[in-house]
View (cartoon, rainbow, N blue to C red):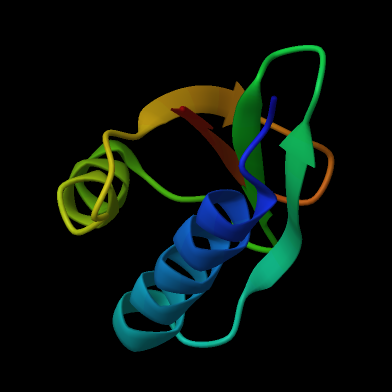
Length: 78
């Protein structure tokens, strides 16, 4: 069974970090049942240094997931 409270809390923590470090630039933040992970896409494309800097700020481990149509993508496996 999926603990939706935990997912929502984690999404709020991710949103807080992105807003504090990058400003409001979230294009998409949603839970994927197929991947059993939270997927984040920003509305900006980041360089390697910015990706590394942002990734180490998250409260849960983040993996860079490439570039999407709008910006850089990250995935958080739960």
